[in-house]
Length: 144
Image (cartoon, rainbow, N blue to C red; front, side):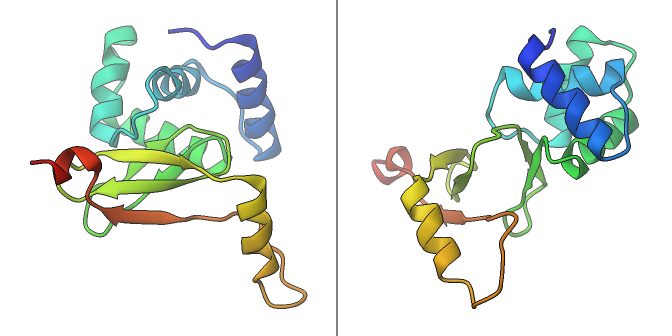
């Protein structure tokens, strides 16, 4: 898997701003996350990454995920006692976690919703990031 020029530039810029540099491993892990936006765990990322980079270690995957998260390219998604999952969707969005299937879906948030949420902050406060997570039961699991 190879990163497109657009995502390579985003990766390079974000890492540079956080005092890091791009490596083959970081590029590969980022491309694995972008290839399938399904919120994988670190173990799932590791399994996928090995197909294109057989020598990569689980420790390297964890380090890359930590660096990508710290640079703002990847979000860590946590639900109760579930393992941390990783999201490479760079738009402002919420997450829905189905407690039955364990699936996580991205929920797009309109600019109007974001503006309303920011307006609800106390005077003088500024939000740099908004994390919204729903949990419940998806439509598929309701029909079971």
